[in-house]
Length: 116
Image (cartoon, one colour):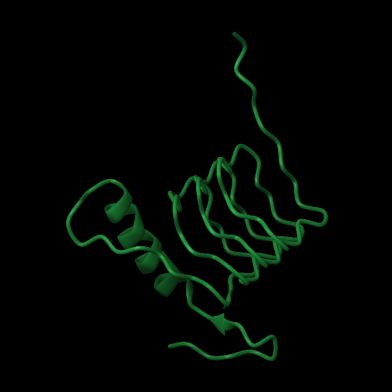
């Protein structure tokens, strides 16, 4: 069941988000039943998406305030206009991610650099 909070973003349950992300992970790994995650204009405040594979997902204009994205794969993900304040992106793969107009205020972004 979804509802629309005052922010205008859809609010999904943990179960709904997990189902969408699991289907997306199937798509990315070439397994049957996969489907691209389209989570644009969704309120994901405080969600834990750590270590999830969201490569090529659409999270544009979503609210990820305080979300945990530790070690998440966000390669080539669309995060344009997303609110990602106070989020933990430690170790997240942001290679090629679109972040035009994204709000990353007070977000924690730690990357590891391999030693050659």
